[in-house]
Amino acid sequence: MSKSIQLYLHVHQPWRIREYTAFDSGANHNYFTSAPRASTNNASILRKVANKSYLPTNAILKEFKLSMSITGTFIEQCEQYMPELLDSFRELVKTGKVEIVGETYYHSLAFFYNRAEFDRQVALHAKKIQEVFGVTPTAFRNTELAYNNDLGKWADIHGYHAILAEGWDKVLGWRSPNYVYKPTNTSKTRLLLKNYKLSDDLAFRFSNHDWSEWPLTVPKYINWLNHDQGDLINLFIDYETFGEHQWADTGIFDFLRDLPKEWLKQKNHTFMTITEAAESAEPKDSLDVPYTTTWADSERDLSAWLGNRMQQEAEHYIYSLAPAVMATNDINIIGDWRRLTTSDHPYYMSTKYWNDGDVHAYFSPYKSPYDAFLYYMNVLRDLRYRIIENRQQRS
Image 1 (cartoon, rainbow, N blue to C red):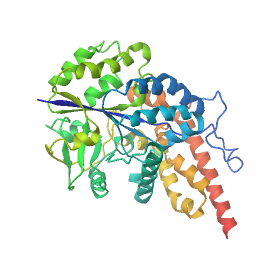
Image 2: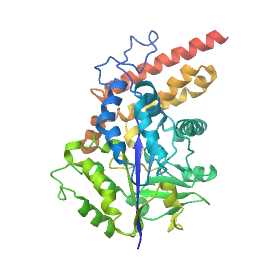
Image 3: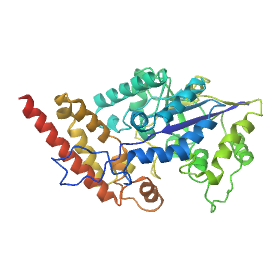
């Protein structure tokens, strides 16, 4: 029986809000530029992660097929702060082995709040990917792998060959994530599901000395892949797994370098892109996902971004401004508003505990979720001031 690995990597950096106080509101419209040493400095963060993760990983990913998604906000930061990093991604795509997966330009939750804006952000992303890489996405992933039946239907209407989702046990039931599935009420789009156990072995457990399977070697991992039911092993992880979340001294780069070589030694082993995998076989079954799943936290739902009142208020407020923002026809106001729809902002406001809480705190540049909320709301107040000022100028 043939087996294929679908390695999908997500590349994203948000425009982090600086420590924006109430005294800044109405007086200073600079939301995203921080002092060089500040924890919110987007330029320094990009360069740090580039040197630890993106550049060394890109140097390895030229020998086999894979898929990746790259947000518009990441591309913007590359263009502004580190053009050579964007060039390294261009070189990868030029190999013809790398597929770019579509998503929202701003890594937002717009699908759940404003479908028209969601469509606009997807179109903006597709346009940017075509401009930068010369390709048009044929597969789609929503922010944080958020998925439900409505999104599957949307992808089918818009002609995507494939869409990605979390292979969550509560959805799969007796099924394996290692097959192609058909989303409910669709005709052509195919659903590929993350094998979260094998993905998380790399993304979260690789360097954990308390893990019963540590150290994870390539032969051991391939043995697991071979014995896992199904033809398609979907490994969906963040790009920063390599070098940033799992540091170089853990051996993660050696693992990434050796895995393809050892995997391809067997004749029935291959690598495929997401679209290729979706078209490689008939659907095993139709999959009904009536509620939203994501790849975040132990709940695998939207609670990572909407689990408390601060997060809910912040998301309600930002999307309530949409009609007034668009009415300004001001590209600066609209651009800032869209950067503020990025899902990282409410993610930093999470007040979860234990392991999930540790993950949120690891990614947050702020001292507390309450600081993240206050800075964000201060910015929204200033944005509202700019909208009112714009309206007065036009009247």
